Length: 109
Image 1 (cartoon, rainbow, N blue to C red):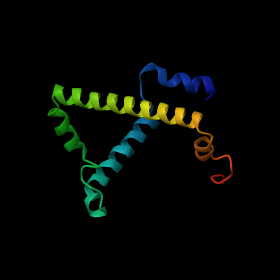
Image 2: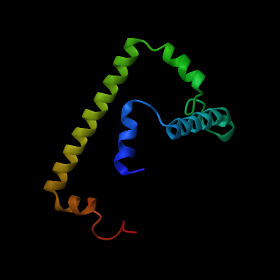
Image 3: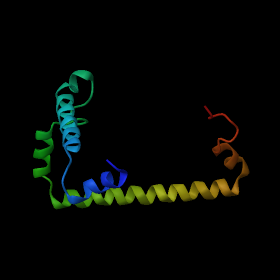
């Protein structure tokens, strides 16, 4: 199969057998892990079963969506402000700029 044919194959809205098989493997692995998670010390809410996910989605209210979107937007704004403040501090302080860069070889592998 040529590269152009490969790229065009997914644009018709149909899923390939490989995609379906990969998704099926993921779903089965997730579901199995959801049952064994508590025995492995993983909290049940970290890997919920698809039944539990479906039940939760049926109980979502518009206020839940608004609160979640507000939290995401707030986190983005806060991280942007922190990034700008740190960038300005590094610009004004040569010591802080040197401390934040890894050009001295400490983090090289």
